[in-house]
Length: 319
Image (cartoon, rainbow, N blue to C red; front, top):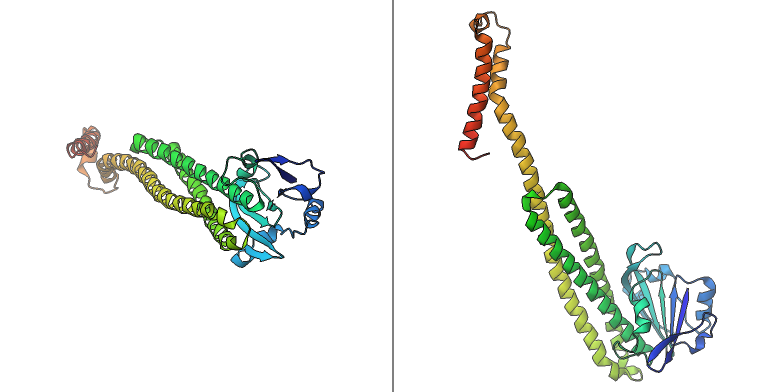
């Protein structure tokens, strides 16, 4: 799909599908078709493929070519089947417009067009648009971290409240929640790292661009926000470790209770079993076998030994 936007005062207005892209300040390519890629290439912009965007080498993610800046970052979003994933997004900055290329759906690309006049330096030029869009993205990442923090609060409070009395299913659900939040925080941390590199690359060339000095304070603000969120990621990571340790500790306590019950049952039946096995030996000379009250006596010994074991365990407060 291809979404094109033009500036209307301080706002962005979406252009019709068949409109001339020469009047667009922002062209957003989402899972683009070949003909849509050709329309953008007609503007003199080389559109990278998904394989190019996934290139690990930083030199292939941040570079300048034919007067355009190519910046590729990794952002969390939804796949075509609405599954949360992280994927590369390329920002191509030319003198006249911003072109973005993505193959998944980060939330800020849906919210920003209606908020362009309220975020950062506005949308009065491609670089202002880029800075504002990145600010919207960072705000979304902050929201994700805030949601992860609330989920950790609920999880930790629930586990500590239930304690060792928590059901196995509740503890298993707690471990799954820990895994989900850990995955989310890891994806946000990766996004912050790639955005930080892209903003640093972008800021190095501001002095050579018209109006670059006006954007420098915004760029510094973005870097401070990113660094603060990275610190918050580390804090949430330590909380995740604590929540994981607490949950696993509760799992061990529940398992220990089960083992304790089985051990008590085994201890109660050990003396009666010893008596029964003794009289089950096939020796010729066992006087008790000929006694009239031998059988009742053996049963009595078994019951008495089990009762004595139970009393001993209660006295030692092991039950």
